[in-house]
Length: 96
Image 1 (cartoon, rainbow, N blue to C red):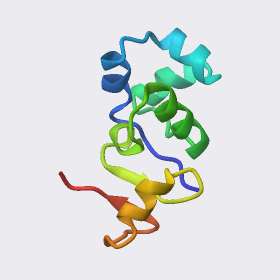
Image 2 (cartoon, rainbow, N blue to C red):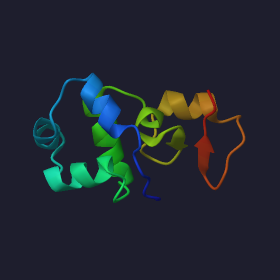
Image 3 (cartoon, helix red, strand yellow):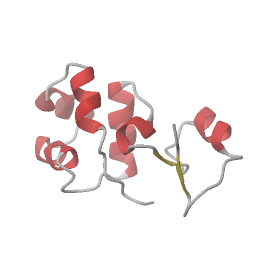
Image 4 (cartoon, helix red, strand yellow):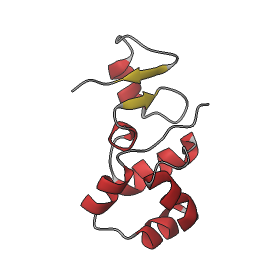
């Protein structure tokens, strides 16, 4: 599965009033990884994205800037809702 950059991670974390170290502890991710994800220095794998979305209680697209991976880690209801929309390379770009 593809790795994705997380342009919305920092704003979602700030909105949840969680510090990087606390988010790292809650998700089991390394603080260095979170820092790199937030600075767009490194893409996150789907497992990390799912843990972050679950912990922050946000949809995946809030973290990815509109890209939703419809693979095994996507929310089932979200995947069903988006199934009839056009797809680009197994990912969907959500326009708001």
